[in-house]
Length: 246
Length: 353
Ligand SMILES: Nc1ncnc2c1ncn2[C@@H]1O[C@H](COP(=O)(O)OP(=O)(O)OP(=O)(O)O)[C@@H](O)[C@H]1O
Ligand SMILES: [Mg+2]
Image (cartoon, rainbow over all chains, first blue to last red; front, top):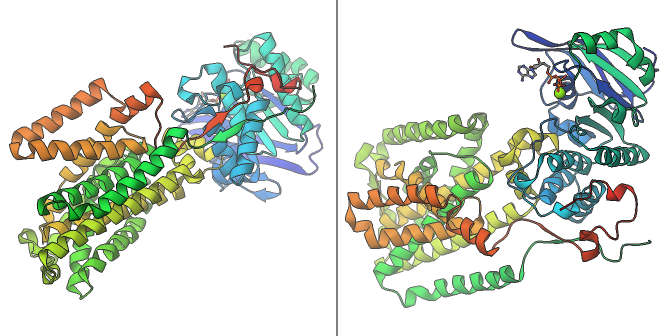
């Protein structure tokens, strides 16, 4: 690969994942440094979300291993990986619907980041503010629209104080203005030295943040490198045209 | 633009809830001296009410806050009574036996949770019922219990009836107060937030660092302990122990009734539901089968017309929170309208409404 993986903070080797007979990930190798911002693209069903789930510990790979911060975390559940600083968001938002927006985020600050009460308050308020959600802090999450639910995914993951943030389509359905705001937020996270893996179909948003792009198709990584080069890769173009563009 | 003058604050209570806290303390103090003014029958009824409150609060904590719906909680009620019989038979002071029994029930529930909490939703609910039925059969095998003939807490009979009655009343009042306080403390703290998060979405809770299994286990054991104490207290009031009365699924049916009528998932709701159940039982309990039909009909009416229960509806309609466990963010006016948020990043995602 074109990228020197010196001091990879997150590395996955030989990842396979099957659901019954369906092979969703096949021999995926992935590594990134702590200060990278990596974008992931690929047609629907390519296995992007599944890769994120395996990285974050939502479920184990069928074969292969994951390491984070120098330790093997393959056997560690999501809770423990989050506490180590590897935190994901969900493509289909999973809010704690009976709790308020603030309470959603507070749970992450007090359990994910392991903060005491006052620090957790501050952290939760800080991430709500960064994501522009202070105005809906007291709303029950079940009353939020899709857009706010996606923001909540980001705010909640942030409150867990990640060193590496795994984002799954948080930008879908945004207007241009909203997308610009989202990009600004992610750039702020970069300033805070938070590593980013970001799955997004809307490539022009992604390219404003990602320094490196990965394209997946049919359970494999088919291109990995400098974003413009990846977008120009014949295999990538074929995957999109052949698989039906999004 | 420089510094934001005031920052958002987190509110836990309200003016009403502070008054409510004082009112609760007064009510408990009045209840403590009440036996002097009550008839023997009324003292017994009040003791039953305290036990109902414990049962409702425990089932509500488990199902309403933790999402763990069990239809087998009678297992802990029955075991609470059974271990008290056993301990008293072994020579322990019968009053001490009541509480020691609760601790043993809690201890027994711990290994039980290891496999029960692997089950999800309906499987867990029914699984608990199966555990209750099996435990009932096992207890029947104990020679001391003599099968369904049952036995009694004879060592209580050495106490004078009126002293015994009032002592049990106070023990029930003290147990209820302590258990409610412990539960309130737990649910109001950060563990309580984790418990509600698990109820709403277990995967998401794990993804933000909540220890799902350990947290559920804590709640399960606490509920078992509380219901065990309730079973032991019930034994103390009725003296006789017949397994089929204590391991009867009706106990869980009562818990569910109280919680659904009062308002599931609110701390006040369980207490109110227990009070409603107690009144219905007091007024109509003699009506035999019609009483049971009435209870069933009430439950159905509530689930159709007041799905959030009495307290849930009051809370929604009037914004009244007496014993709140949640968090409110109080924004300084200028932050709420976005005027003082200085940086470009902070205005990201400004709400339009
Ligand atoms: N839990 C599951 N059980 C069975 N099949 C699954 C499961 N999760 C994902 N799949 C299948 O695996 C394949 C890859 O899914 P995945 O969600 O990882 O794709 P994706 O690249 O994220 O797609 P999208 O862009 O649509 O989000 C799909 O065919 C999907 O149907
Ligand atoms: Mg996906």
